[in-house]
Amino acid sequence: MSFILGSGSPRRKELLAQIGVVPDDIRAPDIDETPLAAELPRPYCARMASEKAAAVQAGGDDIVLCADTTVAVGRRILGKPEDEAEAIRFLRLMSGRRHKVITAVAVKRGDKLWQRDVVSTVRMKRLSDVEISAYLATGDWQGKAGGYGIQGPAGALIPWISGSFTGIVGLPLAETANLLRAAGYVFAGETS
Image 1: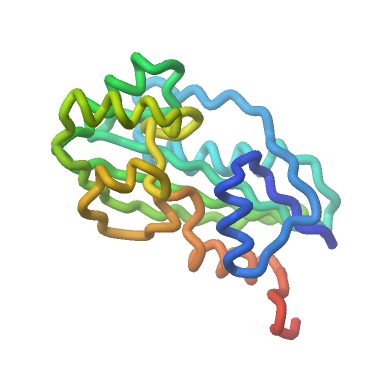
Image 2 (image 1 turned 90 degrees about the vertical axis):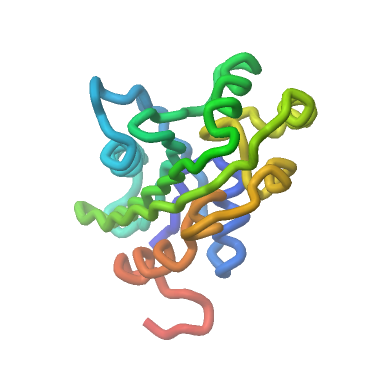
């Protein structure tokens, strides 16, 4: 049995290491992440995680872990900004208000799939143009849903959260550990 992380995210790999889980292999799936017409953020995020898990090639006894993190303002899904102009639009949209961060986790073993999503609420302070420019200059917005990562410089822009900090980063650890156990993963120090 091998444990395969179906994600190219260094953050997910680092989060797994916090609970003593080291992947035997990393296979980032390549899927179309375009939301369907009128698709709501939470179902979209769950669909992305399960489609990623289905796309990862694995043996019948291998355990595959995939996840998707989606940032939503109301019904609007904020993906990874394509450029700095889109990152500015996202930050201005979230400035001074609350938004949701949804992380869906899918664990596959053979033809079985275990899934869970975790929704957290994040409040971003009201941002000045100077703060937005300074944040963009860090480059930290690139490749991150919503154009920010709470674990980096953007942490200074977020005075309040409700939910799972690790879920906001990209992998809710308590829920992930439970899914892995359900799939038969044995953590160090545990007996099967």
